[in-house]
Length: 303
Image (cartoon, rainbow, N blue to C red; front, side, top):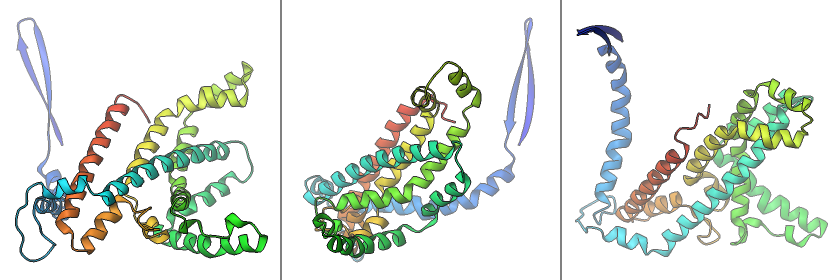
């Protein structure tokens, strides 16, 4: 990239205008990524939106049916249930993950022994595949914990939480939070370490308790990191699939079926165009949420 400066003289003043010219080689480096992104994401997305206005089953002939798929999707109880579960699950999990991760971060930056080793231990779940974690916890919830409940004579532990339509979502939140907390924890640790120690020393001199320092100094100074974790977490949990697939496969019944699972199940069941309409709606909802989050966080210097 080269810069050129143009001097414009007019009357009694001289104006300097600086312009930057991008070297063609940079566009050459950008081209492969742009082509791959277009072929792998943009083109399939446009084709999917196109077929959402048809009666296609994914193969064979098809014909246009206008907004029929969209009208049906808005009145489909199964789709509405998946949206309700997905948003409810996302909100609860974001709260659980951020509260626990922040408390752990506060503990791991304090003056305790073995904090470096503890940080490494707490980060381990982040590097394990979600589907593997789901199968491990599925065994624990379905076999180990009920066996423990039967041996100890505790009735509510004797049955699997995943078999209860009213409580299966709790197991999904637990497992999802267990995997998501490490990444959130690292961001909070970075935020806490960026706070100058002089601030806490001054608070100590003024007689502020540890709780007052936490609520009046720490929390306000890491507010930007809260925003980052909430935005990233909520967007990630909206796309929940692998952990739910491994734990409950959307059951019992369809009580824990997410939007992503509903779309994929429709693809496998021959409802290609119908579920493409559902996917398009979900895409637009995600865009609206992103725009809302951007409007809320605009002007914040998070980092």
